[in-house]
Image (cartoon, rainbow, N blue to C red; front, side, top):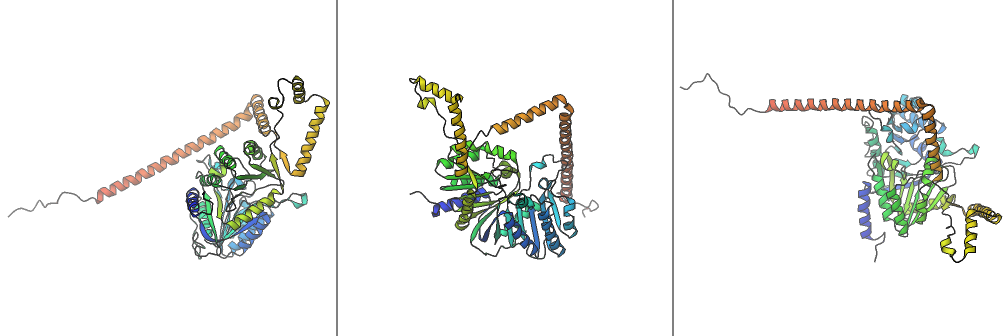
Amino acid sequence: MAATPRDPTYSKFAERLLNRAAGAPPIPGNAIELLTDAEAHFDAWLRAIRSAQRRVLLENYIVRDDPVGREFRDALAERAQAGVRVAVIVDWLGCLGQSGRRFWAPLRSAGGEIRIYNPPRIGRSLVWVSRDHRKLLVVDGRDGFLSGVCISAKWLGDPARGVPPWRDTGVAIRGPAVARLEAAFLDSWTSLGAPLAPDDGTPVGHAAATTSPGTVAVRVIATQPASATLYRLDQLVVAMARRTLWLTDAYYLGVAPYVQALIGAAHDGVDVRLLVPGASDVPLVAAMSRSGYRPLLRAGIRIYEWNGSMLHAKTAVVDGLWSRVGSSNLNLSSWLGNREIDVAIEDEGFAGQLAARYEADLANATEIVLAPRRFRRSERVGSSDPAAARRARVLRRGGGSSSRTAVGALRIATSVGVALRAHRVLGDTSRGPLAGATVALAALAACAALWPRVVAWPIAVGCAWFALNLVVRQWRERRQRRHWQRLDGAREETATDETPSDETPTDESTTDD
């Protein structure tokens, strides 16, 4: 008899696989709350910040200089003024043009500490590849939050213009897992400078270790650049799914091994579904994502596009037992390039909540389907029927008023079908990206031919920048090598001075009697 997900043998084997892939054991005894959309997030986050008594640790990809960002900054500054330790990490690229030094001045004046992740630095020319994409908040070592929500009014939409809020998902955690959230923050903090000095309360990173306000087991998966931890876990979860695998992602760009894993699961009878944005804030990513729909649809995977302003959630729910929520997208940037933080929750109750939320989201989404198979002469028209063959050729050429009428009727029927059934037939997804690439290359060729300096100067500046970085890096490595050589020489001299001599000293003035 085949094992089921509840069999002890299967459970032990699955737990060992997940432990090794995630690099994080399950932490039992937690209380978990599902947070949906920015308004719920901002209310919970601000409430926790304003109640802080010891420390507030905030790590977020974007904090924007708008009403929402200023409300958070002022709440943090008020707590810092009251003597609460406030430490903030924001990403340089994420906040570029969103908030700057002047925005953070009130918090710094109040005693808060702010560190910027990976600003451009001489000697590190490719630093921009790695980003801090986490959305993490920990207050007093008691309340932990992680999500896909950035601190920006954009997530609230624009009611005056009829723009609905962005769709996003996160969790609030209380219990022993909060200590792991703090430890993840500390890892980012110390990667940017001196460690965080301890406050007068519970040591940072050891908070809430003895309290168990709930019964939920949580894995905290905090990834660093080039670790590929979450990629291994995502691959493993797809391979272990038996009944359902429901994914939500904001910037899906599946690489070949992951796509093959999804297709393999679908071929095994797993109900695989993918919910992605219909209108993205990064149109190029949306176009690239659509170009990969066809092999998934052919394998029987169901793809849905959200009909709202922007779908920014990153979630997975598997077999109604296992779920994941966090900041990681299903693409190489999140898997290999960024600092991300997610939680994997092994609880049937929470998975049921997330599955119910997923089904509610599908009610506001359009399913993408393949077009019906086109008429094939080899299947329906025999060589012994020349009249039928001629009619087929006319239809394929689109000749005759009747064929044009049929095409028009088909288009109308398709539009009505989309309206009634919330389905849309997948078109030629490669045409848009190819046309865009063609236009871009043609424009670049024209600029190079007509205005060569327009092309040459950026290339020259880029080459000079990389050359300067290489020179600085070589100089630093040479200086460091000399430093270690001096230390090694000093150690050798010390060792020589302390080594006792093998010869026994004698007194030459002493003579035998």
